[in-house]
Length: 71
Image (cartoon, rainbow, N blue to C red; front, side, top):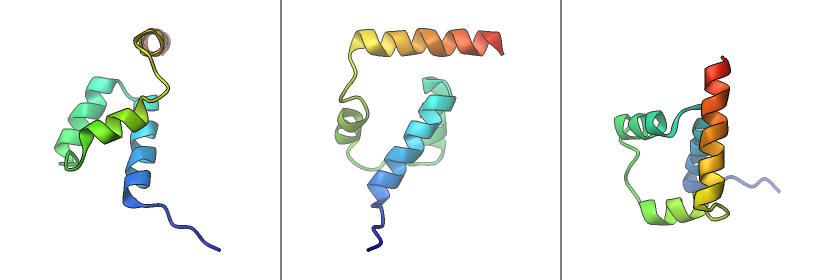
């Protein structure tokens, strides 16, 4: 049986790829430029950051910035 992902699942996967490769501010600008901001942001935010805390997000930001400096 073939299972097709919903549009929301595809958007979520794409956003995760962007967030893993771009600065969050650039992802937000990209998202705004594509006019993707229609929908339930609070639900999406809860799905994206369900396993995160302020400390874990801070750690990821520090790691991301360190990697960018090395390049």
